[in-house]
Amino acid sequence: MKKEQGYTLVFVLVTIAVVSTLALTVIGMNLQTKKATEIRKTETNLSYEARSLLNEAVAHVANTFPANEAIGADSEQFETKLAQLTRTDVTDPVDITRNAFNSQLVRDGQSIGRYWYDIIEGDSPYVKILQVTAEVASTAANQPVQERTYTQRLSLSTLPSFLYHVLGSEGQLTINGAPAIKGNIYSNMPVRVSEAPLYTYKGQTNPQVWSEKAAVDGTITLGIKDAASLEKSVTVCPSVCLEATPSSAWRIPLAQEKVFADQEKTRFNAAPETFASLDYRYSLLEYLNREGINLAPQNVSDPDGTLNLTKLRTQLAGSAQLAKRTVDKVTVFDKDLGLLSATQARMIINDSFFPIKAVLMDTDISESPHPLVVDGDLSIQSVRPADDPLLIMRPLIVLGNLSISGNVSFDTTIFTLGRTTIDDANIKAITTGGRKNTVVLLSKEEILINRLDQFTSTQRDDSHVIEAFLYSDSANLNRVYAVGSNVTIDGGLFSRGPLMVNAFRGDFRQSTPPADLASFQAAMIQSNEIAHSRLKINYDASVIKNRQQTLPVTNRVHLYVEAPKRQLR
Image (cartoon, helix red, strand yellow):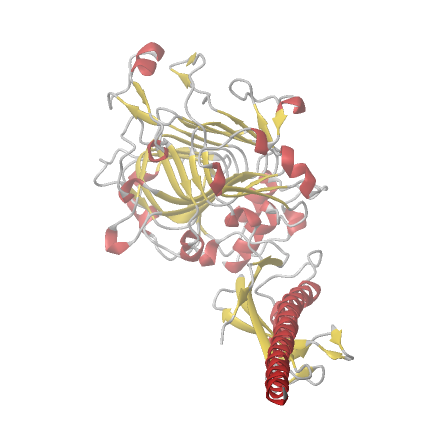
């Protein structure tokens, strides 16, 4: 009996020991789980605080450079303000050893962390790229020290916003047919789309010809007031979109219908107050000032501040900084080879009394960093073959209309004070000395682009690509036709007023011009391949870099913010 009681006691003790061990294990696991949960909570809070710190750093820059303050990026005021963000010779709240600002956000009565700025690209006088680094740490009781470091790139720029977009309008953008667009788009109003390009051939307007959906690989930013309006940010026309704005009843929720090809690559954004418009008068006068040609704004403007072409012509003709060359009212530049080979002189070409009408056909304009001012209209009518195009390699200021036709290669910036027409033109890349074709064309009035590389195949090499930013300052409708044409632009296309692009996707059975509209349509070979679009526009920031000294600028500093990145240790 006593032996059995002994066994029972042993069993009870063993059971108690096992249960105690299990209980301790469970308690330990619970404690570990609780600790891990607390650590994870701390990590989450640190990530949130680091992002909040980045927002504070961005706000600091925005307050340093208010959007409504007139300031030039190459001015002493700009450099002074920039130094306030990056210098090390200041006192609290800056930590001199790390050049870091202590956050105004607090945790347990202390700043949550600090941030600092580094200039990572500062050679350009018009664009400064900063990297802000935000660093936070936690020393919570019974936890290891945890740190989080996030970085974010900021761009301070006096360049107008159109240079950061591949396509757009400060009015309304209309896309008829099937262009292939890669890059960001801006439209101040809902974008209008249809699958049918509008075109006229030999005076005959097309009947309904369906193409395909446009392809947009990028973000469409709209100048609307709230993100909720993005749900109906596209107007789909029941047939081809004409000049008149269709009823808002045709606007559709994007979730209900596939509007674009590969629509998963198309994103929408609402940003009504972030667009930096180009002030054409300011940009032109600022460029002339860089060249030592100082014109007072009031001497070239109407009382309302509008640029007055007659006054501008008079002021430039009387400028001591411009060499003068008098020609006939109607003149062919090719007859004066010395005129176009003067590589250094800042020069104005004019008639003694009237605006000229100048033609350029077979003579290159030699490379020069200084502008050639044409006091009147300029018609570039190249007679060169495709393998030896006309070369234009110096800045031009055309105080009239500009037209371009034939085989031409550009490496230049052009200010055109009138209309610009690019018609029946093959614009090729400059390959001499490894140079590539670059055009920044700023037209005060409308731009018409038509019949570029007409009826050629869409399977082309880079020699056919135009590296260009094309901008129209006109409030009137600008139109681009790429139906029989084959247009590829690396850079951008933008208009202050409404912009309509018309594009066919496919090829033609013949490379020669068809006899009439019926033959034109019979030669069409429609394709659903995006690569076969006859209008391709691809954003290329290198065009901006290639023309640093002649780019248009604004008198405001604009802040552009990239997505934040976490730095792993």
